[in-house]
Length: 360
Image (cartoon, rainbow, N blue to C red):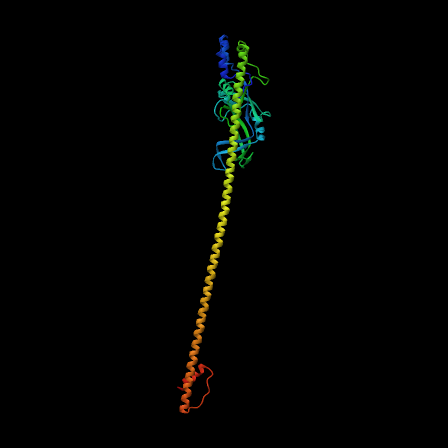
């Protein structure tokens, strides 16, 4: 819960104060005033935006083709949209597209008067006037601002912001309305209720009650209210820091897991490629050896057939020569027996066969 800047104690502290004997001695009008207060518009101030990443769970992401997108909002864009805050409605209701008629229709619970950059907190801050009592009560109870704005242009180029990934960058936008909510988009956008732009003063009715109490009880009461607010503010700040730390650690773990998976996938792909190359080389070598053996076998078979053919030709020639010689010898014997004239020895087997046919 944010600490109020009007020096008023918390709601519970006021209730305890009203139950004290001193408060019961006051006129009834004072006690009622302490509970109800005035209905004049009150000035409020609260954080609304800071540069960084914003996640929209209901957006259609054009990169992943699924729901949910994280975009980067830069200070330059926040500076450019600052002038569009003035005159926009403040409502104690869920986000909806605001319309200028909200003021006429009574839907607005307040109006924004200006936005400015607060260098102390490094947040874009909103000032406004709120007239609705329940909205003011919610502001005191620690509700926060959440902005409604039109986004006119987004550059869907992914990148990293402080080592955290985003899907795109908001390039142009303008405010439409502001809501008071316990669950803002930007955690830490607390609201403070102000009396004026100067140093706030204590509510005179509360001061009247405190004046009726002993000094020690007044001091204890004010210290209790301040301690309670400070304690809750500290607890909230620590919870916000822890949530931010956890989110950062989770993002870092997810990033490392993604990098490890990518490295493992790359290594596996390299190993698979190397194994495929080894298998291909082995297959090529086996095929070459098979071809070599087949070629050698074919060459050996051709040589064997050639040798066999040559041997057969030689054998046929030898047999023919032997037959021719035997025929010649037979003719020679016949000539000698029958006193046939001598004839010259034929020069070739063919000539001898021809001569034999002519004679016999």
